[in-house]
Structure formats: C-alpha cells, structure tokens
Length: 140
Length: 140
DNA sequence: CTGGCTGCAAATCCTTTGCAAAGCC
DNA sequence: GGCTTTGCAAAGGATTTGCAGCCAG
Image (cartoon, rainbow over all chains, first blue to last red; front, side):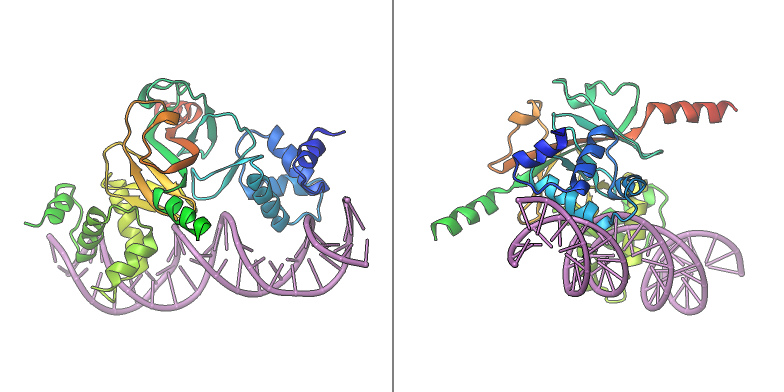
C-alpha cells in the first residue's frame, strides 16, 4: 500500500487522489511552497484540480498535524517536515530555507552563509486568559 | 519639542500630523495592532484620515527602522518595541503578547502561563546565493 | 445510498497603486 | 513654488465561502 494512503488512513482521513497528490507533493518539495505553487504544479497532472481543493486539503492536513503552516511572509507557506527546525527567508529572492535548530543562542546560530538581518521568534498556542475561560466553560 | 517630532526630524523624515499620530499610537499601544486597528482608532481624532496614509506611514517607519513588522498571523502587525523579544500569539483570541528573550532553550522559556503549541523561529535577511549575485553585480 | 469531497464562481479580506488636491518647507 | 504627502477610488492578490454535482464507503 502506498505510503501516503497509509498516512491518511491511519488518521481516519478519507483517501482521495487529490489528498495523496498534495501530501506527496509536500513530501518531495521541501521548499515550503505556497498554495498557488502547489496548485500550478499539481494541475499539470490533474487539469481539473481546483484551488479550493488545495486549500481544503492543506487545512485538513494541518488539522491532523501532518504539515505545518508558515507565516513568514505575506502569504501562507506549507511544510511537510515536522522535525523542529528554523526558517530563513531571503528578502531578495523570497526563498525559504531550513536552518538546523541547535542549542546555541539565536544570534550565534549557524546560518550557512546567509546574512541574517532579523530574528523573529513566534510562539503559538492558547494564552493564559483563554485557558482560564476554557476551564470556566468546561466547569459551567 | 514633541518627542515624536524629534524622532522624525532626526531621521530627515518630513513631519506631518499623520506620521506623529501613527508613531505615537504605536508607542502607546504595545499590543502589535494591525493597520486596520490603527486606522479605526486614529480616525476617531482625525475623521479624514485614510488607510493609504496608514500603510504609507507604516512602510516609511519600517524603512527607517523605527518599527518592526510582524508576520505571525495572516495579516501584518506592527511593533514599536525594537528591543529583542519574542512574540506569542493566542490561537483563540488572536492577541499577540511579548515574551522576554532569555537565554534558555526555546522549549523551556518562560511563557508566563500561556500554553505553547507551536514554536516558529523565522530569520530574515539575504541568502548566500543572493549575496553572491549582489557581489557580482557590484563588480560588473 | 448518503455524507463527505470536489470544483466552479463569487465574495471577502488585506494591501497596493494611480492620481488629483492639499500641505510642508 | 516646487516637491512631497494625503486621501479617494479602484485594482490586485490571497484566501474563504456557497453551492451543485460527483465519489468513496
């Protein structure tokens, strides 16, 4: 059985050719593509593919923690790689490049020759106040 | 002379009421507002203010490194605080909260009771390949 | 069958652009 | 007065939504 079929089935996600295509695409294109790029590339093999399905599928994969969504630029980019790592975005060509995590302080981390102008650390989750609200809602 | 007038004049930026208003707003609202929020709030005191001016002004302040642009969500947010610090975004209420930098590894950092689900480290700058291209362009 | 998935089109949200009038020095 | 900035309107790009037909289980 195909690798991506198993990944989907294991999580109880309905298997469709489109979902396999997107998952497979992200696995083999570790360049953090945006929805448009994925769409244009997959359209070559499946001309009837729609962008809505790309968005639907990406959102579903994200909900199941199969991919990560990057907000490093003005549009969303998608990442199959779930191992912890950092991202470097070139302000000139727009490329998003993986940077190994390491334990060194951020300003000393190995950036493989890229010139770092800005360091952003974004944490996402649920804030203290919302955790409290959730607790009250569950008790109430 | 007003604090914000000096900040602008020192950098050779033409002083206008709108620019003072935006700068002053960001200094006193450390909640990382988006352009729409800044616009709606400042409109109360200056009904003829336009959103174009907000965008123009924010871009100009960014070019002069007077503010930082955050890409933590689907829209840009703006930060007056230039000292290094991290950002936490609540996925429930959307608030963006400052987190002190510290030297501890990221997964151990003090998050003041917020529940962290995702850690994103975004570096921005110029990649190795583009640095090389720039060098060639300057020599050629 | 039947609910969920797909794909088209239209809508929406955020941001940028073009341009005439007004403001700053 | 010349040059920049402002503000309106319209355009643009990315993402979401509504809905009819199709497909997997």
